[in-house]
Image (tube, rainbow, N blue to C red; front, side, top):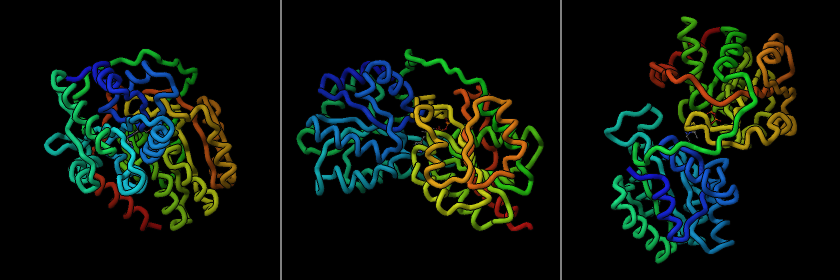
Length: 376
Ligand SMILES: Cc1ncc(C[n+]2csc(CCOP(=O)(O)OP(=O)(O)O)c2C)c(N)n1
């Protein structure tokens, strides 16, 4: 295994100490180490992976130095445009080091949303013309690998990717933890809100633990999953899936259960919801100020005013609550308010240790929902 400090120091000795990216559970220990050991100006968690490539390019333009962009392989798609039309040698020819967590590696058991991306990760890098190596798992081999990567980036002026298998990085516990003052947890908030949603309505839930908690709520209540769409992958797109359903099923209320990380990843989507303005659209953002599902790394969710953004983008009603009593009060007549509506629920980080994963497949989920939507 590679210790995050060893990796960090290897790069530092090559004059590389600026990091940006979107967190991944496979890179959690590395992210925690850089958060503890770099000032905020040298480690910026980006809104999305494409944004991280842009930020890295700006860093290179301003300093002449090589930046690091880290991501889960799910985020590779978000980087294709800036990698091809900004940093590629046929355009601005900017070097950067990509560190990519390899979910869904062939032969390694993983969730369905990672299978395809895992399969195409290396071929995709080849198609993009990005030289890569699978990151070594033995520390004695690390210096030589970093040297090869750095020589390539310096000599060719191009990107280089290190693809990281599960379990490559050794444990590292984040030291600079910030205690939350919030009292409500996401699972309880999901329970209260879901209980208030009629069995004729639809819930589209976001990537990560929110969908897992919604799934377990239905199991606990012995209810089916037919009125829920679990957006297991496609982070940041749940709100548009919900929009597509809402405008085509005007006789139902449609709820999007979103995360702050996912909302911020594609905030532009809210401008479309606000202007299309479906009267049956309820956007619930569980804001824990973190990418809770992949290790709890911070987002800017609690530093920005998401309801004010929604208001400015055309939502008719915006509400923010941060405790159970206020949430329960708002739920008494939520669908009586003018929509599109955004309800921000500020929740504390964390989830149950024994939280399960959906036991039905994505196809089963889709088919059950489509049958449900065909009914009056
Ligand atoms: C494009 C993309 N980038 C990164 C990921 C990895 N990922 C899965 S869930 C998640 C965090 C989501 O954060 P948020 O929406 O705030 O929800 P929370 O986990 O806090 O409930 C991340 C980064 C992903 N699935 N897709």
